[in-house]
Amino acid sequence: MQQLYAQQEKVLKNPILEGYYPDPSICRVNDDYYLVCSTNEYFPGLPIFHSKDLAHWQQIGHALDRPDQIRLDSVNPSGGIFAPTIRYHQGLYYILCTRAGGDPVKRNFVITATNPAGPWSNPYWLEDAPGIDPSLFFDDDGRVWYTGNKTPNKERYFKQREIWLQEFDTKSMKLKGPVTLLLDEGATREARNIEAPHIYKVNGYYYLIIAEGGTDFNHAVTVFRSKNIQGPYEIGAKNPIITSRHLGNHYPIQNIGHADFVETQNGEWYTVLLGTRPYGGKGLANLARETFIAPLIWEDGWPVVAPGEGKVLPQFLFPNLPEFKVAKPSVRDDFNSDKLGFQWNLIRTPSANLYSLTKKPGTLRLYLKPENITEKANPAFIGRRQQHINFAASTFMQFNPKNKETAGLVVYQNPTHHFKLEYLLQNGKKVLRLTQVKAGVVEILAEKAIDAKQLFLKVSAQGQAYAFHFATKENDWNLLLGNVEGTMLNRATAGGFTGVYLAMYASSNGAKTTNYADFAWFDYQELNK
Image 1 (cartoon, rainbow, N blue to C red):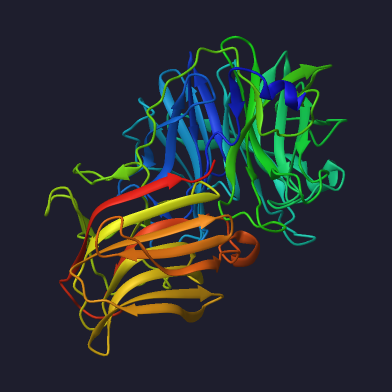
Image 2 (cartoon, one colour):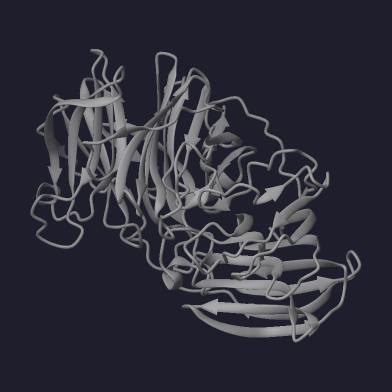
């Protein structure tokens, strides 16, 4: 059947969002589809995507794009914003989400908008909503229900979880009424780490889907149903309804889980869910968790995902929907706007005067800050996701380093795992240096004395082999160091949840300065599809 799909003129290709776009949630409004993903410590947060055919997606904004909406200053790497749910009801869009880590430790919130492209409201904080992974369900009797997961009062083992339900008042944006425990792990036939609950109503039944098994190799999606939203819930006899844990280490799509369902206007059903594409070794997925899609049908009162296959494929038959044309991503961002493009992120909530797009039109001016990328801080860092296994990224930088100052291009997984291709002053001489930070250990891999007012910097990868280049004239590239092992840039080695970022970076490393680095453009493209 996989060969049959490959012969179709139009196919639904996976992943539908490449690179670090985990924990997808989806909703349909008439013939429009909207999707949101987690962003952890990155800002702006919660990217919003739009589609009309489920295959092609265009980003239309971020739900958290104002520093006054939410603060991420104190969150740890891989903390922050995750596991959103997007829903629509009577002219209003809702996103429920969790801010995890830092102070306060965990808080769930709701934001709303009349237009999914924004602006979105400031958060309504839910003071009595423990746990993570909040979701809303609008019942046909007018009642609205909130569900999430939490740790039980007496945790019998590490990461034991429960799924709970409570009514939600959309006028006051508060929970009300009694709390109902829908699932504990003893009722799920030894399932562990139950999370990511969503409720749907189909043919008179309430269906509760959850993720379980953790977020790595054993990740899976299971289903339960009841005639009463408050339960008791019957266990799906064919659970899990989708997973990749039975397919072995070499199946190209792993860690499948954290699903959300949607019905098309033509009566077809699909599920979006997260997964990874390991390469170069077991569990090595530098791109981290991405967004995939699969069809589902209903048989004998239960959902069947990827019917006839039972697994997420690299491609499926195209939906019975008109093809949606989206703008092809440009290879080059020449910074000719007064706002950053949607592909760019900063680490944590940005401080004022971190960068400017107007001081020198057509240039991104990045002001040096004392903070650096090894700290739990908001460094002078503007990056985009690595979205392909084989890629090239390059930039044109003008920078005159002084004292401890440095600027350049970084390949960033987290504060303890990254590469820096940086220009700095060393013993009175200007040097281009490639530094590796692995498990917090700093190692200089290569350096070259260069005295230039402008530098072209490039990083590329073929699988797990990264290469670093420089030039003083455009396209006159010189190899600084090739075949650099990149396997440390993944969750299996570095821990956490986030994927690799390619970023423009500058730091004064603790010193006060008014210096800056100017970046005239940034290119990114896939290589060797």
